[in-house]
Image 1 (cartoon, rainbow, N blue to C red):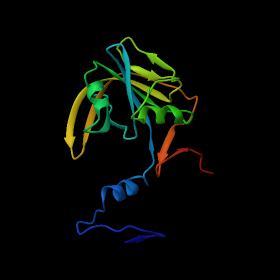
Image 2 (image 1 turned 45 degrees about the vertical axis):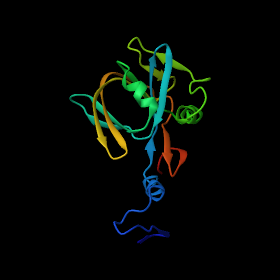
Image 3 (image 1 turned 90 degrees about the horizontal axis):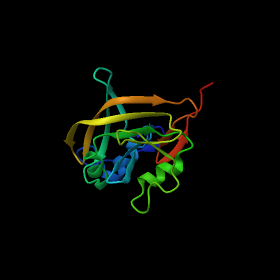
Length: 173
């Protein structure tokens, strides 16, 4: 099939290899969120680009997380998790939180909530959440979180992930 100047091939079922599918998925821009909590006196966190508002009543959001994530298995056990919508100035923070090695929080400014949730400072918005539901789908979990408290800042635009690169929003003329 051809659309514009791009050609995408697939197998008999119409879908290419996972790496090809990942490339096609990357055409859809998304914001980036940090999911963090304190567990056993340690900060635990990860970056996700699959944040979705779900419901206003009850207040719910969702995330999609690889089923094999060892970080999620630690966060899942926390009574509450903080979800921070990262700003355009958080590219380094996002890379650290997505890293498999090293101290993910080295040099990262955080705020600890009394609930145990951890927020990244100067985020566009934050949510204090508890786990509502997990749905095992394919190679991911759809995680539904109940929002207990929120906050936001208009200080910066959001960090956007598109075609495997970080981008910034610009107003259309």
